[in-house]
Length: 71
Image: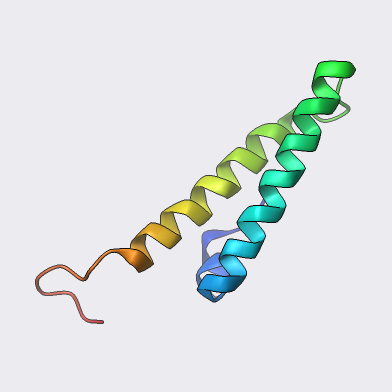
């Protein structure tokens, strides 16, 4: 599981690449789950949450700063 603090240190391009890699991992795990039992089913939840963290950071960076926010 990736910490939000670690993710904030990455550039936008690195976050997008990491998101893509995690989505690929999630897809492979879902396929494996459909065929056989997973050794660590908790890994699915961890991947989904890591992807959500990255999506949140990317959305924060894309949003215009609100009133009173320092850029």
